[in-house]
Image (cartoon, rainbow, N blue to C red):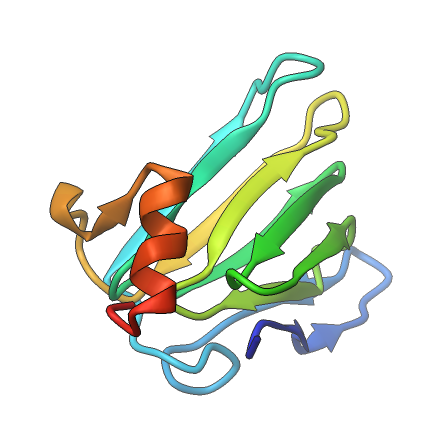
Length: 135
């Protein structure tokens, strides 16, 4: 699995710190879509899908949450809780987000515009597609 934590620039300042991301620099793709998750009720999960083409970069801007990735062979959990690093998720990886803390805010960047046909929402279908090399 090529998922990985990427450290972002962190500019320290007594007035408040600053971090940033740039296309094809800190994030290994051109950003085509940006969205965020917030007000996730306690005990709820988000995600539960894979993408055929879309790559993602996820940052916990506030609070914390876990991202569970599954490439069809192994699962790995990443805990995000700092705004100066993020998780790169390549296409073809099942993802679930869980354990959201109160007032958590997840910022997500995608490599392609929204396309419902890019989603694989059934885990059994995901496993089948992976085993046949179709994603």
